[in-house]
Image 1: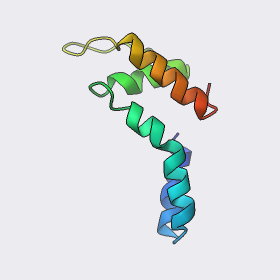
Image 2 (image 1 turned 90 degrees about the vertical axis):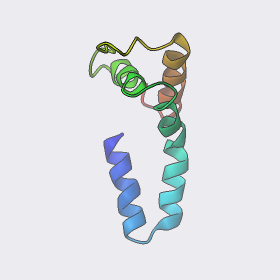
Image 3 (image 1 turned 120 degrees about the horizontal axis):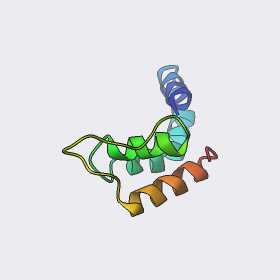
Image 4 (image 1 turned 90 degrees about the horizontal axis):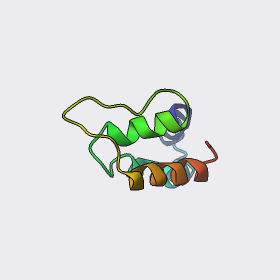
Length: 82
């Protein structure tokens, strides 16, 4: 969601704090989900679900827990990205 994060920051920087806060609340489930496991595991899961890359990680990291994959699927779906 790079464009949405840029829009959030632009709104805040231009004094549109209410709009920035609303955007932040909309994206907060994603921000929270990205840290349910050691990064970059959840990020790679999200990008994989969006078709941008595989969710493979190198040691010492392990593959995402099934609950993380389902959470990311739910969050991305809630944002209208899946």
